[in-house]
Image 1: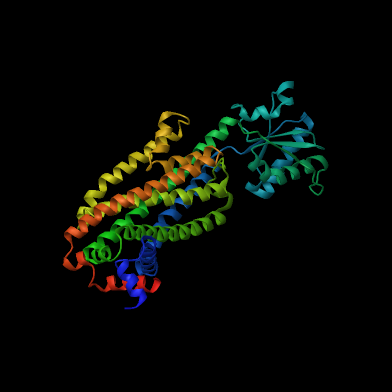
Image 2 (image 1 turned 135 degrees about the vertical axis):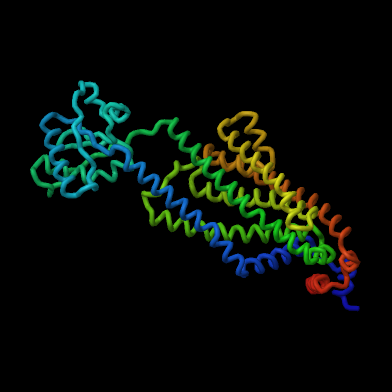
Length: 424
């Protein structure tokens, strides 16, 4: 007998756990990726996502239109009248491209010296303040708006100064300073949006693991695999195959939605930059989606060992879905209580940790806690895979036939044994 075959006998004809998991992952990934069902799976979520993005942009545009877009002029009486008149003339010529330029009257010396304070006064109702003089105008207001209005204001001041608009003055911009409270609120909205997106993607995609497992369990393929290779390999292979398919789907959807945002430009809704920056938040989002997917997927695989029909799957998975919803609420509430006991609990509990840590990334620039969190979640994935595979092995071996229990006569079993022999 040849050397490779003797080695095959010594190893019971089986691949190592990781090698067998790679074979399962590659098989499932390629089978799903090049199926017609996957194409329609990609198309399904695009329509509500595109409609939601367009609805958000239209809503923001309506809100911007409903707001009073006026520039208040705080100069001496003669200059103010000239700029207001020039603005009205430009408004007639250019239409909505030019904001309304109005005079702000009834101001005392202190208010004229600090025109930025007028932006917070409800009685003025202006979106920006034009102060200074005709030779050195200063436009104060939100940075995004005053940058867009800079050209129109320069034309109005130039016409007010010389009667023509050919010599444009340099308009100094004075963006209003964002307070610390505003920044915290903005980052909180970013954290909430990241949490919601992570939760929706996880719940929408994790169910594929369960449906794939139930399908193969129904046609006895899973029993043959369980007899041919370690059950941990089957679990790991299916988990990472489904994770790879999910990442392909997310990349496709992100490309389409990114194109919509590029086309929409400033009309699309915007979020405050997170504490760790957008690139790092994107990287952490992919990492925490992977850990959340693997954690939930391992639970769904364990549920698959207890179910034999689709109806049983739905019945058994419903409590898990409800618990996961409660876990999401826990992470969302903990996000508003930084440093509290509830936040610590959400960070330590494995199923809420991905959501809590992603929200923390939007609010706290520290990166070292994320390394510890990812390692901890990885350990929980290994533990759940081992527990689930043990339960599944017991169920499969108990329900399988003699061929499945012995695992020596099946075609797939011979395939894995030949592959093990060739590697040996």
